Length: 223
Length: 223
DNA sequence: CCAACTATGGAACGACATTCCATTCCGGCT
DNA sequence: AGCCGGAATGGAATGTCGTTCCATAGTTGG
Image (tube, rainbow over the protein chains, first blue to last red):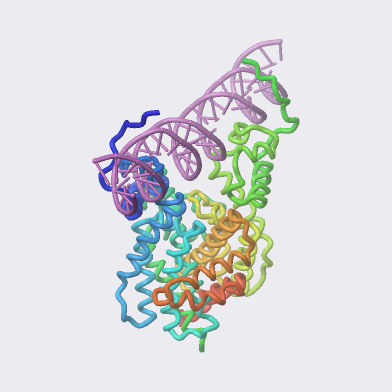
């Protein structure tokens, strides 16, 4: 058969280019926006060409996460006392997740080794610096990591849900709050009581409060 | 056209039946095992019939989560001091996640209102009982919830990854550990140091340690 | 006994990830 | 220069899903 249809690209594709294009798509259209069709169009190529450079979608998503995670971790200012360092780290990660909610989904997929290792290492070093007993280093680091992952996951879910229904943040929160208020008061006493605060609350502050909770537990326990 | 092909079922489908069948599939084959084809076959019906009872896959997954979450939450023994109660709750949730790893994925999807509300309420009540200042009730509860969600997410990801590659838990952990050991020692000092402990560690104990970290932070802060 | 409604089951559709493959480009060898 | 083989490309084909459609069957109430 013939195949002389489209012209070939001048410069060849690179993994870098593909990952950048993927990140752009993810930021614009969320995780559902990352399709090989869209990616191929955005790179002016076919799907097959992308597979030459990247094994599959999972690897692509992980590479996108890793690209952003590694950059973000570099940008946190060093030379702070470990506790402040941990707070800075956590906030940097929060802001990252907030700016790129799809990272939550990316990290929860299996095979996200590298980005996870980066985050765990960054946290673990500071935990270690904090003077936590060796036997607790892992569980403390793991706790921080799981907490951050949990927040990331919720953020990703919320962002996706909001996008699918064209809601902005405040409408979304109001919807959740009013749904909670309609629940059975006997079975959901706490949720119902807290519902009113929901629309006004500050995610970032709550996140930091959670980190501080863990940190204060961490420094209180050795005593 | 005619359509007199298959015989009709004697008793009609119910949401309950569908959810039970879905849970069975999820437990056997993981989240990738829950397809409408498989579900329809297991219920001896067509996909269309299922859609009459349940709007879409997201609702199905959420219903499956909710079914298990609500049962599990009932089974935790009441009448303990709040702190012990929180520990019991957390362990019950951990065991639930461990037995049904797909719940992690289910909870992280948007629209998992009910199961989330149940868990948050159960946690929040005890946090409230603990005498935490009102202004902190939400952030404390939210922290616990996010932590649990993070653990659930990791568990789900690991289970899925392990299933896809036919690995048992110890092989999986050994693989991760040796991958971590092969990383650049300068850039991943902590991860590398901790890698050896990984295969031997006890998930459940680590999880509880994390909960205790948050709890001790919670009772230490008011002072 | 006949409308309206509730359900059913399976075929058809559309979106995707992934695979295939004919073709083209390029660097080294003679 | 001329040729060869591997590296890359791009787009068509494949297979799996979720979801929708629709012809049909029970069921119920007037």
